[in-house]
Image 1 (cartoon, rainbow, N blue to C red):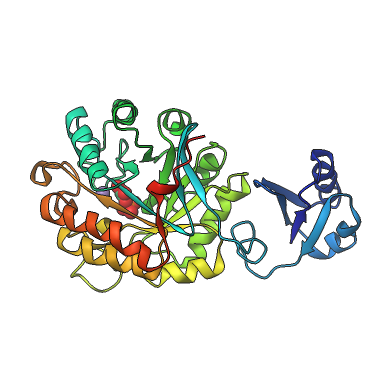
Image 2 (image 1 turned 90 degrees about the vertical axis):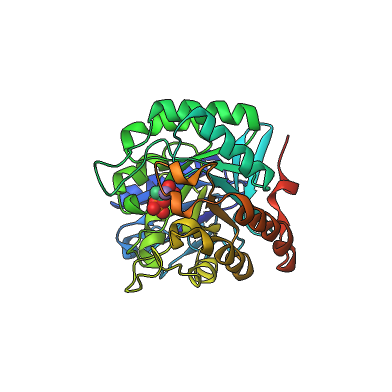
Length: 349
Ligand code: PEP
Ligand code: MN
């Protein structure tokens, strides 16, 4: 059940609703949006009916819902959301109407490599820089990332290039340090169902990029987003990055239909990662074009100044001709589906 507060509801009104819900043994999760607050109720629906919640001051509406996820559902939040990424004076939108291009190296390896990749990303039109300081590798013997030193490099590169940073977090204990350096926290496919981590990023106060688990259904993915929203953080962007199927030609199978399916069910923005989906650089441009055509709110792509020596995911990193082709696609195609480049809507106030 969801209680929608009216735009002029006071903090006392919200607190009173929470108190009433708790008085019958229920739990109330408050999410404060820009315009209005919504309260997700968990517990015995019949006992909530006895509370006559509609009669309480500040309550605009009460809904019984069928989706197992509430706060991220579009049922009570018909307008699709925009998530702003960056700091005061420079924030990039991800959401309907705009198309956001995110690029950068899979992993932060050195200051020079990251800076060079950031320049490549920016020249190609990217407005947000990606780069992993903590790498969740399948093999414990593979490069695990530079950790805090990598975060420092990212923060430094942001200073030089002006690009806000999205970087992965793999351990709830690192939330404070990652949030201090980055503008957006990424939860990767291997951690989509790490509920403690989802709750921790939900409390971080930073926007979250939530990748789809490689074996997760769309509903499970949205339930993972609900964990973040339930902690008061509605700034969640979903990322389709391919799922495991029987097809070995690509690293994963990009589930392109997930984009319109999610957009019909959830108000959260959704972007596509063609690099981790395909695992092959020759497929990144065609899959990016597909993502734009299907209506994705952005793409996130691996670029590297020297893929041959990359410590992580070299075969899927772009440079040269492919990167130029991608730059052209993200410059020209969004307009054909009614989107403006996010670069033109950057918030500088
Ligand atoms: C990444 O983006 O660097 C990454 C590890 O992606 P995924 O979690 O989708 O595999
Ligand atoms: Mn990678």
